[in-house]
Structures are given as structure tokens and as C-alpha cells.
Image (cartoon, rainbow, N blue to C red; front, top):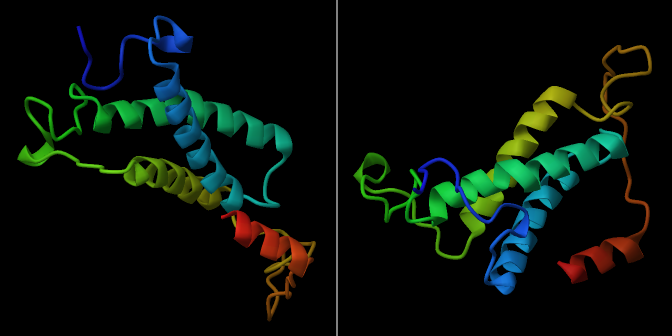
Length: 148
């Protein structure tokens, strides 16, 4: 029977009939992880990045996606008893992706704090004025903007 909190089928591609839909969801979960990556730039090590990416895309994103998009999800507007009598309607997926990535980024930056060396010196004393962090390559900035 369906669960309102998390799905009970199709784990690790078991009994998945529509691989295109799975790839679509995979891309959305990866997008939520890249939101966090941009926020944590220069604040965590690669192992931590890989760890939170696996946790976010493998466990957290599927729970949120199920809760909002599944007709059995407890946040879904199509649930038999929707949240606050209305539920959540997410037309293009941006709510699920940005809420998952944004909330994760918020909590991660709350834990990690500001970038080292910008607001405090090496011994931890607060600087009177933050150090400037000029852009490194205008060409790469334009390429990144163009790709977005």
C-alpha cells in the first residue's frame, strides 16, 4: 500500500517501466545538489561534497518529490486529505528542486559559516573590513552565464 511519507516501490531502478521519467527525476535531483554546491563553494572538502550530494539526491530529494508530486504524498494537493485542506501544487518542478536545494544550502552554510580568510584573519579575529574577493576570469564568468 502507498505510504504518505515516502514511496515503497522503484528503489534502485527496480521495476521501473519508464526510464525517461526516471532520468527526468535524476536531472532534477542533480539540480538540487548543484544549488548547494554553489552555496558551499570553497567551504567544504570534496569528500563532504560527494557525501552530501549522495544523501541529498538519494534520500532527501526523493522524499520531498514523493510528498509533493505523488497522489499519495502527504503534501500533495491530490491527496485524500491534503495539507491545510489545500496541499501543495508545483507546476514545473521548481518548487521541489529549489526548496530542497535551498533548505539544504541554508542549513549547510549555517553550520560551516563564512568563507575562511574573508571576514576573519588566520587566528580567528574579526577583520575591520572584509577582504575583497575579485573575480578570477571574466571569460569563465561569461561562459558560466551563457551556460545558465
